[in-house]
Length: 296
Image 1 (spheres, helix red, strand yellow):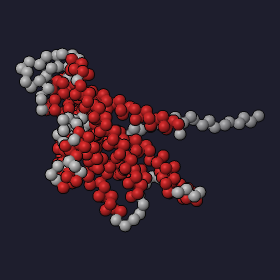
Image 2 (tube, rainbow, N blue to C red):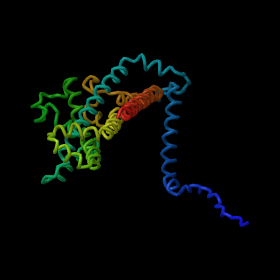
Image 3 (cartoon, one colour):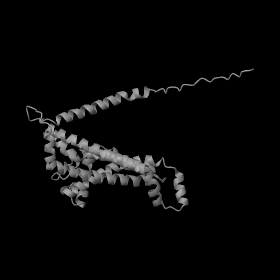
Image 4 (cartoon, one colour):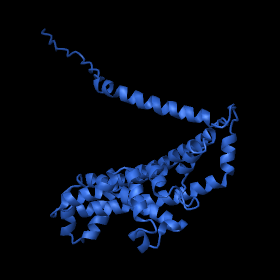
């Protein structure tokens, strides 16, 4: 009787995935350096906020949450937070919306396209100090433009509107570049199909372009929100926080207490509160994006 002997195939063990650590080693020094300075600065600011550190004092003592209690009772700080909210909300909304519209317009081929794109980006690459000084000179009451506009920097409302317009003019180039980059990834066949169905240019923008670039618009809004909430240089150069503190934002209020009045402890507590606001705002934007992604 013949017995058939079959061949037994040995079990193949899955290979362990090899992790290449070289790319991580390349970026490790920069990550450690930035992380160390960020963490150390945050710890130092947090500790300082719990003291009555003042350059005019010989002795610095630990006061716990005293600076934070003072901050919540400080009507000037509360007013600065309100002005920051008006300023940041206005600039983010105007810059993001304008940047989107300009990017859509400049995404089409036309003569001089590159020049126009560069012209829109120029304000973003100019230093904040130079921008503030430039517009301050233009809008002075005795300057031609300032005289035509009735000296906007002399009134509280006019100064805030001028500051919002100047910062929007500076920020719109950043929004445009981000949206332009996102537009390059949209499949042209989507527009062709929409044109076949008889969709107008406006409907194509609203139904195709806007939904596909909305994640980029959210990122733009987050970055502009953080940048403008912490903006100091351009405000100092443009209005110095006036008139009568009309353009004194939270960041400028913190700067004045820390580096003009040398109330380091109180200024540090304001900086910590600003960090908390930044984190909360970022968390809100992230939750908004996640809920939007879940609904699609």
